[in-house]
Length: 111
Length: 116
Image 1 (cartoon, each protein chain N blue to C red):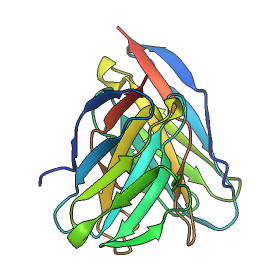
Image 2: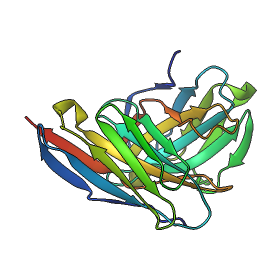
Image 3: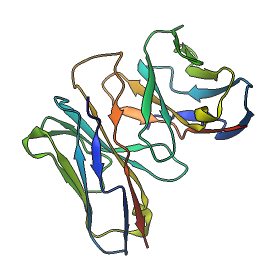
Image 4: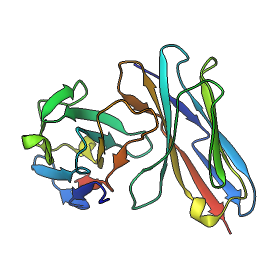
């Protein structure tokens, strides 16, 4: 069983503040790390697929980093806006295995 | 490009009843996934199809859950009989099926099942 942990489970952010949260995964047999954003009543939306140690990806005000050797990825939101309120899911894929999701970090941006 | 379509959006049934969910993936996507997301947990893969063949159904409770993907396009997931612990969001996703490390999965909006 592959253990993918996300922390914190939830966080409240003041509008305009920046924030970040963590995804931890097994460091062995790494193949890819996915990040998804899931807004209430909508479909989970793919943000990033990361494959290389040291990868950094950016989409607007959201960025992510990857450390495959120690088994973690950070997701950053710069200047949080109310529309950033969502659950952010990471998912780890080992070579030859299925995608295993973490429990998500629920972000609420307060105006 | 049309997204992954799922129906119904919501369903409330009594325990021991049956229920079926439908999914239409992105046109041309060879791989289709059904996930179960219980409140407070991450999505768990129930079954993965490659075209109309099953690739992984190791976490599908086969005594009550069944799924099919006839003709390698649409898919249905059935629960018979339902238990209280089946209350969850059932997500369908698809991907092209070829190796593409830049491609995440495309998800439908899910079916929220409540078993009472």
